[in-house]
Amino acid sequence: MTIAMQLPPIQDVLPHRGTMLMIDRLLFADATTATVECAPRANAWYADVNGDMPSWIGIELMAQTIAAHVGLLKLIQGAPPKQGALLGSQRYAATRCAFAAGVPLRIKAKVIYCEASGFSAYECCITVADQEVASATLKVFEPDDFQTFLQASL
Image (cartoon, rainbow, N blue to C red; front, side, top):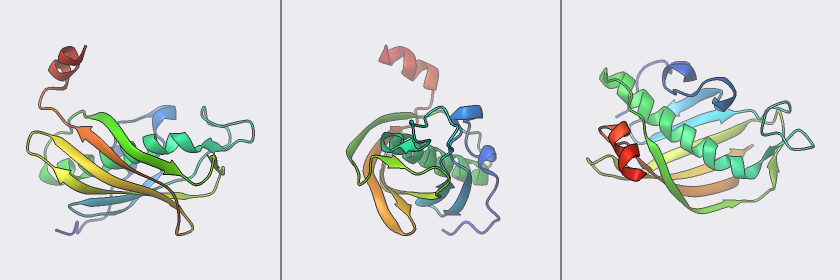
């Protein structure tokens, strides 16, 4: 399935707002993959002493890419978005300590496993000028009832 529509603004598919909205825009999406863009900001809450984004923030960029993918698929289906949870990451590796402010990052997330129960795994990577600078596998869960899931997790 190819998504044959103009990609909506990121705010239409991602619930994050204010300083927690780190993704700038959707670049590509289909049934199993999403690619987004983010340009780290020198004045952001996460900026280090040089104004750069520490590379450990890459996990959040990957998680927001997954959330944007799921949100877009829900939008296409006419279904309301559901809250999800990042369960963990496997093998997060970054080739640099920080991502330079103002230099666009491309984040790609591809479904590698998906259950009807809401559990999924995504293979993710971050590139700068077509060079991979970070990668990981993220495991996420989209429960039917997020509040019950949270209460059961406490």
